[in-house]
Amino acid sequence: MYDILIIGAGPAGMGAAVYAARAGLWAAVIDQSPISGGQVLNTCEVDNYLGLMGETGGGLSEKFREHADRLGTVFITDEVKSVENQGGKKVVHGYEKDYEAKALILATGAAHAKLGVPGEEELSGMGVSYCATCDGAFFKNRTVAVIGGGDVAVEDAIFLAKICKKVYLIHRRGELRAAKSLQERLWEKENVEPVWDSEVIEICGSDAVEKVTVYNNKTQRQTGLAVDGIFIAVGVVPNTGLFKGLVEMDERGYIKAGEDCVTSCRGIYAAGDIRLKPMKQIITAVSDGANAVNSAQGFLA
Ligand code: NAP
Image (cartoon, rainbow, N blue to C red; front, side):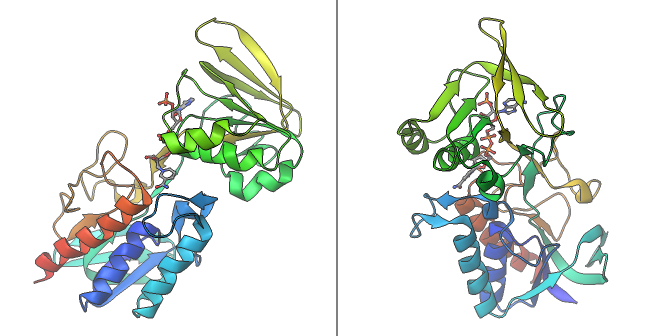
């Protein structure tokens, strides 16, 4: 039986792995993907991780993994089916096998939110994408639209502006919520055109994206923009479906836990983007990992 089993190998899981190893605990990280990193893998460039300015998302993830590997962390590749609390023992049922631990750290991160408009599902993979760094190269010298006004949307628009002929940034308000430093870099790009106060109402095309229809909520006018690709960056939803009934959550599925990462279930901790908290950043996810191990140590003692 492990002392701690960490579910998820993103920054929160990796932070927890390093602190668990340093505390001399028998710990393992379980993730469905053999490539560690989580959402960070979709990031082109990370400019705000202390000491590693300008690192790529992939590069940063590799460094995290290398650190945990060097401290002897056990990595398990398996998809978790369900999790059971048997008091002093927690059982994680995977598709390959079952795993037992005295304490659990949940660090499964978040996934892309959908827009929920006609054409999105049908044209997914045929011009509709949720990952600019993965799919941007398919749109070299073409025209694309990025939807959203947060950090991810602006990072995506900056990345795509280097590859594409033109990038529309369609946002439902007249002001972006992305970090000011990102906004400054965005407006240096001459081929980025903002489409303010506009909501996407339909994505059109027969076997590839051809057009996006937007509704301006100020003028109440509807227009069509000819585009070859659409990159949707309208936020995230926490990957907590597996933990329903196990720990308390809010109505959006975020796990209720404070800075100490303590959940409503004894011996189970929530770290990173799945935790209800105001600031979801790589650095705060890593810090959650450390705090979760600290809390788990108290419980294990
Ligand atoms: P976000 O900050 O929640 O922004 C989502 C954007 O999408 C907002 O501009 C929002 O509009 C818009 N939106 C939401 N639902 C929409 C809808 N149905 N239709 C149209 N627009 C919609 O999400 P994010 O950019 O994915 O970032 C997620 C978290 O990761 C954030 O906390 C972010 O700071 C963090 N992040 C951190 C780093 C890093 O640490 N380096 C990098 C990237 C992201 P409104 O503005 O009107 O609400």
